[in-house]
Length: 203
Image 1 (tube, one colour):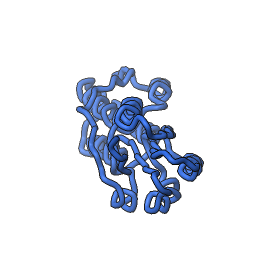
Image 2: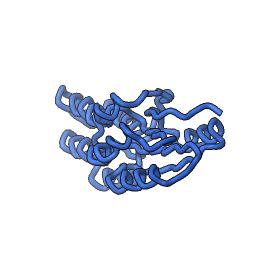
Image 3: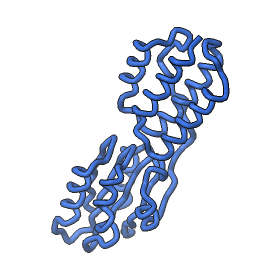
């Protein structure tokens, strides 16, 4: 059986990643911890799993759309010096949300597929606070990759609708939204900010 390697896997297909690890390392113990936002409490659970005694190889699979900086700092030491036969795999859609100290210690494997269009679910020609709230509720568990695709969809729909003043300021807002997502900002924060800006610029 091949030996597992600690790494970062860029993907939003967490279930598929888990099953692939089970197939490739059938004799290993695999502990999976998944969250939309990976917090300090998730890091503590991961560390507890790492120190469980076993003669078998252990894989700690951490899946999240966003890893908070405090959680990453909590994991840093154990990733640097893991217990014997223990390997950490971080699965996330974008490496930009990971601290440089984490990225520098792990191999990065890119499994991100092509972008998928995401429907906004709103009529931008009649966009109001009610529709903004409905959109945020519909996409309340959206991950970074899909949120980026949603921002691109909103930009195209806004241009097609003719209901907005499409000046440099609004176009910069769309670009800034994508940049914030790429830097690891929570999707709900970015989408709320963008929605309020759209309401301001509606004719």
